[in-house]
Amino acid sequence: WHPSACARVGCHGHLGRVERAVPRRTAWKAVAPESAPAYRSPVRDLRFVDLGRMAYAEALRLQRAELERTIAERPAAMTVFLVEHDPPVVTVSRRPAAESHLLASAATLARLGVQVEPTDRGGDITYHGPGQLVVYPILDLNRLGLRIHSYMRFLEEVVIDVLAQWGIVGHRDACATGVWVGGGQAVPAGSDPGPTAPTGGAKICAMGVRVSRWVSMHGFALNVDPDLSHFELIVPCGLAGRRVTSMARELGAGPMSMDDVKSATRRALAAAVERAMAATRP
Image (cartoon, rainbow, N blue to C red; front, side, top):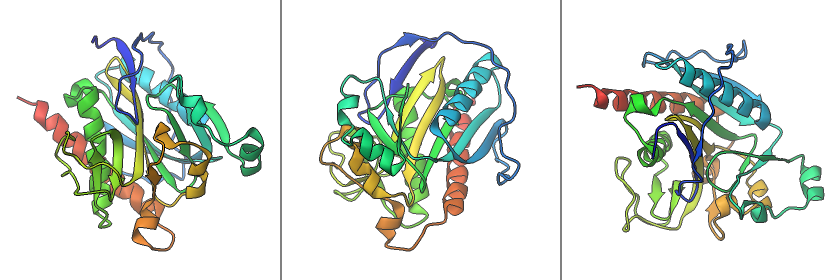
C-alpha cells in the first residue's frame, strides 16, 4: 500500500480496486450558502460547511474540488460538508454486482423523482434523500494518524456517539461496515468489531469512502427521518435481508429536528478529530 494510491471502501468493509491518483490543482472558493448556520469548531484547521439541500452531482463536485485543494496545499485546513440530498438519489458504485441491486424500474424511479448516479466511493448501492443527514469529511488522515480500517472505525464511533445523545444504542456489526441498532449486545464505541460482535439488527447509518493520497472524501449517511419506503427500491449496500431504520422510527417520535442532529454531529466529529490529532503528538 502506497500513500499516493487511491482506494475505496464501503458497506462490506473491503478495499476496492487500487488505482493511482492524478492530482490536479483546482481553484477553490467558499461554498457555504449565506444562510448556512455558523459553527466554530474547537479544532483549529477544521471547518464545517452546511450545504442545506443539494443535488448529489453538485455536492460530489464540491467534494472533489476540496479534496484536490487539501492535497495541493497540505498541511491545509480540513473541511466537513453536511447535506441532505434533494432530489433523492440512488448512488451505484463501480462494484460489478452493484447495478443488479437496483430493484426499481426506470418508470418507478421517474414517478418518485429519484435520480440514479454513479459514484467512485467504496461499497455497493445506497439511497440518499431528504431526512437523511449525509456527512462528507475531507480529512487529511496523515494528520489524524489513521489508515483505512481505523478511519472506518473512527466514523462509526462518531455516529454511535451522536445516537447516544438521543438514547439510541448503536453498534458495529462483525460482517458489515456501518452502524446498526438491535440484533444483540452492542459493541462499545471504542471497540473494534471482531468475530464475537453482534450481527443482525437494522442499519441506521451507511458508510462508504474514497481515500486519495491519504485524504478522505465521501463519508456516512445517517437516517434521521427519511422516507424509509425508498430503501425498497434497492438492496441497501447489497446486503439482502437486512432491515433499514431511522432515528425517528427507533424513538417512535414525531418529526426529528435535523438542525439538532447536525449540531450533535459537528460536536462529535470535532471531538473525534481532536482526540485523533492529540494521539499523534509526541
